[in-house]
Image (cartoon, rainbow, N blue to C red):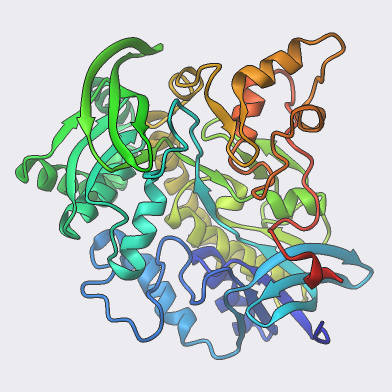
Length: 467
């Protein structure tokens, strides 16, 4: 293992929040090392193509202007010690900061930092339904990652299904990338979505550019003859070596009705019911987290300067709850100021003055994020898509029926971690990232539901690299 270096700040995540915090920290004289699993800066929102690749019209459009400008400034910061293609496996508190254990292109690596910012982003909410392990079924964010980085399509005939408006943007990108979009399927009714927007017209007006982007994508899809359906969701995905079709069912406000609403032939199903915070690292480090009631997953709690419950450990962006790139950008700025404040590079008055504008923008954008969360809420849909024969843990092939049987057995497990020991659900390579949500739903969300216990290492790593 290489000898560690010492930094004033280590940032986990090269997306908008991490970039914004790095810019402010460096401006205030702090040394910064940044870890990210991608090779280049950008995060999921601006996933850059590999060096040497030419991608025409890469990330154009109004929706990307703010984060693209931030990326340009961050790329110009030569003072960042960039560790791309590197997974942080764990953080360990020490008297004067943190030991950071990572694994990168050259193998195991480590660093020591006085302070750490976790801005690790989010990932597609895994949705278990009959046939979801069939090759060709994936998250809409995964499809978009292929398009963003290389304009590569992981299929030819796409169906997008879910509750989140992002699927309009992804479908439009698929179509412009040369794919065939068979249909875009929303589980909620169009009237319910419009009613939510009209219930808070001021928030809608203040975020009109984002709504306009969705409207433009919708218009392009309809102009191209793509079917956009509301009040419909997926009942099951079918195929052997590859997805061949999806069966649809009708939906009402209380959830799927079970009545078949047609069959669509396709080779790719992109599910888009929402996103979950990357919470493995904060949880394994011991940060206080809360279940996000709006979007699901574990949001790391923090104070007004984005300090977590652990001294010296800050959080920003989707790590604090899924709210979009604009919110992440502002939280990164506030966290950067908070870090400079704690390091003695700013006075309280200076930090407060500098944070005034980001806090105002963040408050406005959080209202919009809350509106989108209401519109896209999967709560009435996702738990009803699964049946007892459906695989919940795809790493260990554990079905919902097996989990329920284990729970019903005399003296059976009462929590996610004990259920894991009995059934092996959550014991595979992904360590529960794919199945934890479904397991917790099956267990029943009462009080403060506990998920799987997060442990080091939080990412897969060869045993030989740890010895």
